[in-house]
Image (tube, rainbow, N blue to C red; front, side):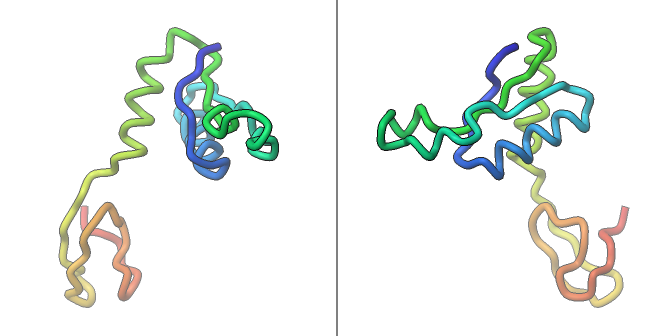
Length: 101
């Protein structure tokens, strides 16, 4: 078992662990509730952490986490409403149409 990353909050730690698990990399969130004692221990020691169970999958998990934290930036024009969409969005914010393939 190896620590992959500390997360700024429990929501992100859970999201990252769920995404890793969906990709076939067994991951868990440790120190889920340590934030409640952050005055008694240093605040950086109370952050939730994402751990992977198989040490050999560490590099693959690190690459996937990097992709999750840095989605590609795209610029496209919706074919349905001609709205300009910027960012990593797969759907038009104006009409809901899917990004063209």
